Structure formats: structure tokens, C-alpha cells
Length: 362
Image 1 (cartoon, rainbow, N blue to C red):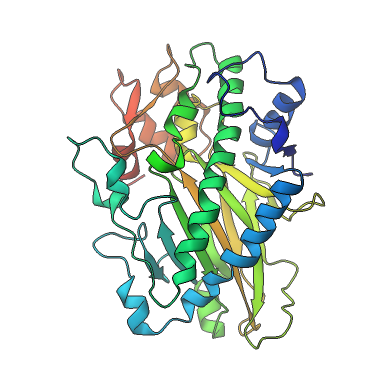
Image 2 (tube, rainbow, N blue to C red):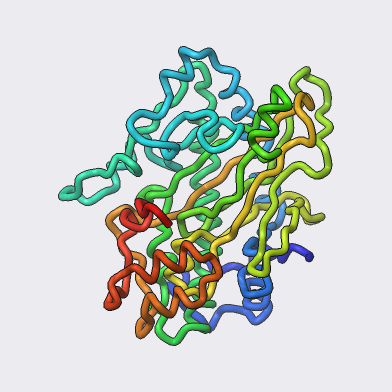
């Protein structure tokens, strides 16, 4: 299946009126449907002109390789930035969710709680201060240069999705998604620089079932993905195996490897579970995994950057007007997700995002 692609120039400008459906071109609507609709992969490619190409090119050349450097910091340096008090949602961790190193940070703020209303107590799951490694001072600088632009690009896509939801769902409130995916300086988004490490033994690879990251779905609204880069462990030109990389499973169960299309530089965007709620089940969260090398000690690593676009912890995920949780559940093909929705009070017309993230047993 060909990966649906859209030029960033065709996406709504952020200065446009939120939820304006009149300006949504028929061609753009068709691409969104092909990417996120019932027959789609749940993933879209966004590309653009020379300025867009240069930004992504520089991001992949300057920021992504620092993911490799994070994994090579001394144990003392890693411990100084290690996650404290939460599990795999803040700062540095390794091996928590696959054979990979991850480093979380806010796209604009060192203390994300600064953008909260004064009367709200910061939830540590989302608002822990960023701990930057002193040994890699360029990491903070390059992240701050790149990530606000990624969020702004994502918000343009969100504006298009907003308009499409308003066209397709009579009760959808125009501008809902764009409001929940806030601008970089006042948001709850999380960036994660990831390095996938070579399996050291056959036993380690077998325990992971050959996966660098096991199958899962993201919790947020949308996720921006920067196409990966590879690095050889011995300094030579990396030669990754063809089957390595990102895979998605569509609503019918078919599994597809995602490769960068022949459009120059690009970004990928996939759907999170929160958007499945907000869209009334029109869009479904994208199940995905990262397949590792076919054997251990292949001599290379993979780095990428994900930006998880999500509401603030205190915000609600609203259903379209006139829709009940049971209706969204009936559209869900994931049994556990469907059960979670069915367990909500029948009169519920929204779910608090923090409550949504903390669900257990589903």
C-alpha cells in the first residue's frame, strides 16, 4: 500500500479561523481519508519545499545523532539525567520499553509547569523539569531550535484533521483538536529522542522477540515521527538490514513496513488513542512496532525523534455532541480499548486526559 503524502503548503495556515471547513480542499480531504480512514494505515507523510526539506535534513543530521551520544555517556552522567519518580515519561531511561534509550523533554520549556494556570498543582507524570546532560550542551540548543517548528507543523496538520472531522461528524465542535494540541510555548507535548541499540546476545534478541520496540499504540492525539538515521558501531558506513524499522498494523490486521517515500525529506504522523475519543471513533489509534536486526551483533544502531502531541493533564477529551461512549466503543476493533470505553459511566460525554492515561487493566 502506498503511503499517503501531503505537501505542507496545502495544510491550513495557523492564522486561519479554527475549524474553517470551507478552505479544506477536496484533494486534502481525500489524502486524510486515505491515511486515517477505515482502509488506511493510520499514518501520513508530510513533505514540503526547500525550507521544509532543509529543516528536516538539518534535524536528522544534527539532532538525531545525539541519541547515539546519550547512550554512550558515562553511568554517572546518565544517572544525573535519569527519570525520577515516574516510569518512562520523563528525562532519561534505558531498557524500560524495549532495547532502546529514550530521553524525554518539553519542546520549549525546561519547567513545563510554567505554562499551567496558577491554581493547578503540576502532575509529576507530565510536568517534571527537564534534566539536560552537561556533557552534551548542544543537545538542549539543537532541540530548542528544532522542536517548536515540529509542533507548529503538527498543528497545521491538526487544523486539517479538525476541519475533516467537522465535515464528517455533525456534532464535532470545530477547532477542538487544534485547541487540545497547543502551541509549543504553552503545551503539554513531549519530545522523545530515541536510540535503538544492537542486540548483544542471541538470548537478548530472543527475549525481545526480535523487536526493538514491541507492538503498542500511543496515548496522545497525534505523534510526529522524524525518519530514522543509522550509525555503525565501528565508525564505518552503516548498512542496516532491509527488514529493520517501523511497522504498522491496520484495522484489518495487515502489517506494513513504513519506508521513507521518494519525496525528499519528510515527516510522518500517526494517530493516538486520545484522537480516537475526540473523533468519536472516526479515526483509530495506530498500532505500531519497531523491528530489530535479524541477528545479534549486527554492528549498528538506529535513532529517531518522536513528538507526542497531547492535551494538558487537567483537560477533557470531549466526544462530538450527541454521541455516547458506547457508540465510540462499538467502532473500536481493539477489544481492551472497547472494554475501557464501555466501563465509563453511561452519561459520560468526555474523559479527563490524566484519568485516560492512568487506566489500568485494559
